[in-house]
Length: 627
Ligand code: ADP
Image (cartoon, rainbow, N blue to C red):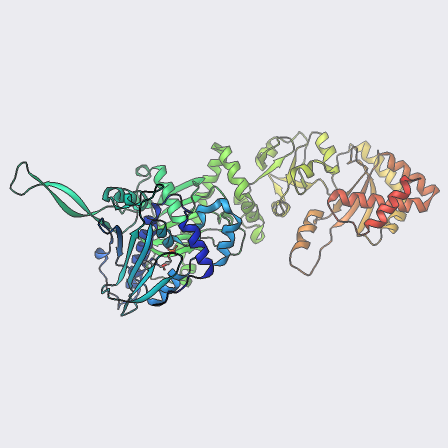
């Protein structure tokens, strides 16, 4: 029979895998047992929703057998089995090309990819030179046998298996210097591996274990008897009491279930009784899931009804601003055969979701208060999501989230909360200052920032695109307004200074009008002298709600309507350029035009905005410096 080839990408990935992507070869057993358990889950679930399928829950089991002489490990389950097509589709394709691409781009992340792309089954090729899968599906009258010797390909033919379920036989590789594959023929070693990785599996995992027993009727003669033994404890980890579970167990459950081999940043295990009872085991990952900001990312918690999985990712259980949380919820208050649509409307699900949201918030608040370093790490990873949560849905969640967000502070040189900022505000300080830019360094060098810092005010640095939208949604914190240092109404003057400035501006009105004329095609709504700058000659500020950084973000969105921030060019009244302009206005209007254009170009460059006419501007500069 001709061998079928694995899909091209699968073949490459399989090669990678066989050549030890996993350094930890023993996990093949965990992968196969998890698949077996999933298959039983599926069959059980079907039986509850389909009267024609009759099963006895107590009969479900997973067997692990060892054939030492033939160097084989055999894993058998009485789950849903696979049809011929399923064998072909599930075991003939390993991963989509996307995943392979990802693998190639991220060479160091070897381990994660296996689980993330559901290629668990193939991990068996790390220890096996041949694999045989005999399966009979609940939906098929015939059984089929899938066989493969690795990357070469596979065959499928009809088989003789009578009972519904799957038997996977691994013919172990020969021992090498690097690996003693025979270890996997040692009952006690294998039992240890099962216990280590698969203890929480809810179906019995049975093995034949040798025991030494007294011979019947004898007082001192022993014989070896083989007894079937259930190896795993079966109680789902989330149903145990917190004090019965070690950190290691929580972590290994996490990596098993969510395919993340880094320790979670935070584990939340909670049991709620009352109106709506549930157990939840939630994890905050320590790093960003690789697909978090792609449309492939699906938020959600696994939903169990009394220990049986209803849905892998129930999105309604977790709000978007906590979408990074992984985990599961088990409740007795939902019936099993509930459909996805009904689930969405379900009051119980909504109650659980609300309660989970509160719990996560409380945990984050505690972390912020008691373990700042961990919170800093958390915030650097997922803070954007919280800030987005403030802005999203017209700010319905803003009050819930405002105490969890942080920004880099000009004075503290680290992330600070809004509460910390307000508690440090100087006497008489009316507002919370912030400045926007691409990075802390860039913000630090903004002309608008210099004087405010000099006067001893703290400034929050907003460096992510969502930041200013979040603060604008909040509008105030503890009744203190947020003020962009680039907004034209920032006023740090004393009454006297203000009066003096107003006077000079009034006197220079005609000059500004003529300068505005020069810039008439440039979206500048005003030009004026300012006291907001210390050493810098010029800056751009904006009038009204839309700042120049918001303009950048909004115009980068796929949207035909472009917005324009109302820009004001402000010139430092205490800089020699102010005097120079006034002289030129009186004596040389042609030069004033050139100076105006150059100043405007400078101001745009400082703001990080493009200039329309770089050639003209550089010629003008050359003109002036070569005089
Ligand atoms: P994953 O389990 O992560 O989806 P695998 O490569 O381990 O990826 O398995 C691929 C698919 O093959 C599974 O999703 C499942 O549909 C099917 N499968 C594997 N093992 C079994 C089994 N013992 N019984 C029924 N189906 C199975």
